[in-house]
Image 1 (cartoon, helix red, strand yellow):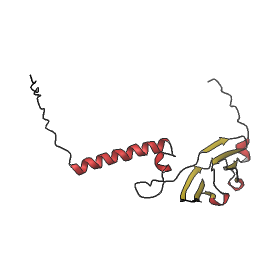
Image 2 (tube, helix red, strand yellow):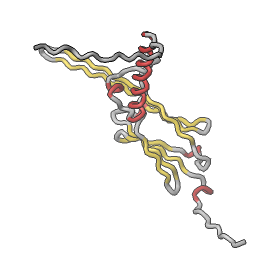
Image 3 (cartoon, one colour):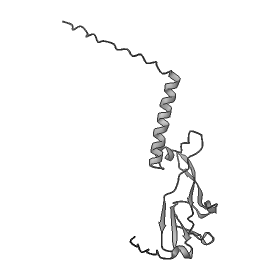
Image 4 (spheres, helix red, strand yellow):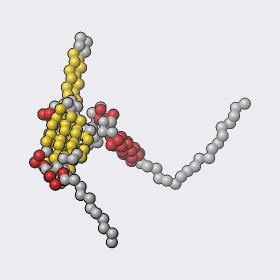
Length: 171
């Protein structure tokens, strides 16, 4: 005995369907938003490792990890720049901003009996930091060793003085 199929009621809604081109644009916008979310979460996302480009067609800029520390006599900025050469790093001060720029290019070539492999990768970065008023701009120093860029921003003499406690009087 064969069971007859059960009939289901078909519901209809009075909404207008989305045009096909518009639905693709909506999906593409969603994908871009999700990609941007992952990129914001971690700058070395899977897309940047592949060397993907932004929607504008430009290569992504990878920002180095940076520590900023407030010491007694100076502020200290340390940037991790593994594999970079000192000659490819630029530190500038302009209009109250300290800017780090760098570009890394790497080429590998390997030849074997049955193969030839050539790889090229490149990337650039730029990070800017506002310089506090307490910094003596003429005495800023930068040093680079073992992949670490260290920038010291010495505080002016009045900024180095200890905090003064103010007594509170009752009214």
